[in-house]
Amino acid sequence: MKGLLTITDAADKIGVSVDTIRRWEKKGLIKATRGANNYRFFNVNEIKRLHQKVNGTGTQKNSYTILKNPKTKYKAIDLFAGAGGTALGLENAGIEHLMLNEFEKNAAKTLRINRPDWNVVEDDIANIDFKPYAGVTDIIEGGFPCQAFSYAGKKLGFEDTRGTLFYEFARAIKEVRPKIAIGENVRGLLTHEGGKTLDIMLNVLAGLGYRAVPKVVRSQYLDVPQKRERLLIVAVREDLKVPPFFPKERDYTVSLREALQNCPISPGQKYSAYKRKVLSQVSPGGYWRDLPPEIQREYMGASFGMGGGKTGMARRLSWDEPSLTLTCNPAQKQTERCHPEETRPLTVREYARIQTFPDDWKFAGSVSSQYKQIGNAVPVNLGYHIGIAATAMLRQAEEYQNFDVPELIYEPGARLAFA
Image (cartoon, rainbow, N blue to C red; front, side, top):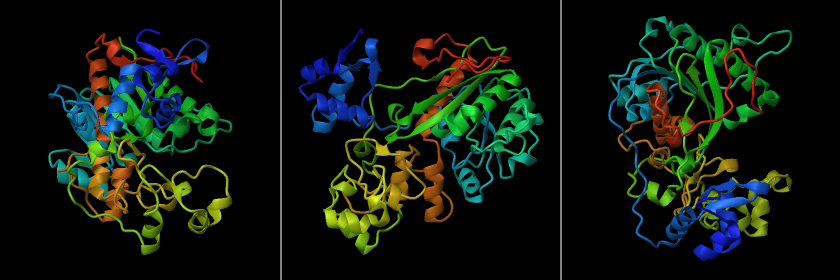
């Protein structure tokens, strides 16, 4: 394949072992392209760049940055806005917000503190009339929670989703008729109820007159120092002569070392003396298997004899890789997020850096509420890339080479052509 090498040829050219390349791919630090006979091929420049970064050689500058573009004419509504990760990302892509909806009081306060000029509606989405925004809104975006539907005896169109937050998301689209609608959710929605839940959502969007495509995006290849996967559903109104665009993955990642350089001091959770003693024995990038056997059994308790890798337990992050996915609590036993060097959980501002919030973005509420807001957020730079793809669609630009354009589209009036 042009510009790509087999794993053996790439290892020989860079001067590393085949096992090293396999390990880097498994960790999500480099990407493989599948060719004929399912063989893996690698971009040698991508591997060389990572090799230099890991070994501290080369002349690469710090690649952590919060991306911004000039203002455009396009306008958006942001639903389930949370602490503003997607909203800020879209703003950084040049998109103006007409309205943001958030029900949780601390998250809504966070939005107001940072953007007093934003129209933040702190209310149950079911109470909002979206009709005044018809004709002036280009984009509706929302990270609606995934809720189960009742399937029995129903055709499962728009009305059958009533009572779920997806219904409210779809109702907003129906009342506003934006040119682009973007839904965001966890990867698990792909397989929820054997795929039926996603099928229904795509069918509803098609019934509203939108070409809709789902795709999992990986944040670590989109200027985010974090291995975080999200499912995007991009829907384009049928009169637009353009397919759905998705952000195109870059051929580099941003390490935790780059992200946390000169990070401001801030509050954070503390370990107990016992937990600090245990985690002090784990090296950067390691986890519970690094501990002596007797301490493994003592610390793991009942989990020790259970199946599964349990790789989040006693986990210390690595300087040279993107962070693992941030949770709502950096000191949860099953999903530990210990600082790479100091024996402590990541702080609030370190969490925010990893989610690509700027240092001047303030979070309301208690420290635990701030962790939760940040952990639940879409990374700002991912929001930026989503916004750049959306503005290209709105321009009906033929910039296909700059974006991922899936071939299978859920057309209005058609059945789902995707597995």
